[in-house]
Image: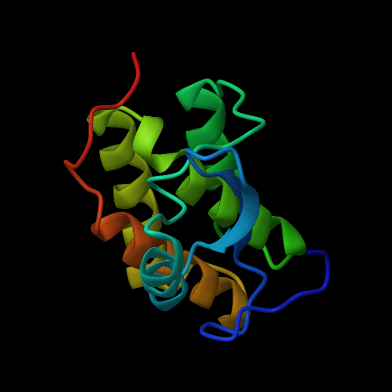
Length: 138
């Protein structure tokens, strides 16, 4: 999937996921791409499983977000994609911290280049759908 751009958001917003039938495929993390994947397979990045699911300490994840805010680097895309993928497994408290940090930085214009700003806005849009949804792992 390296090099592929999403037809809906024109970013590399794909993550590898496993469907209940065992099939592994790349699915989009942007809103329109996730809707397309749900229509096509019945699942999206939030309702399928990560075949390499590794528990990530929420402090490390929120620290990565804080590190990436204000940077103009490829790392912003990497952080946003991984936060979106991990979102369903985060506690509500961690979700609130990440959303607040990102929203405050976007509102204040402290998010690097315009391309980086678009990534942070993508994170806010994707996570808005799941705030309070699901039962995060302890």
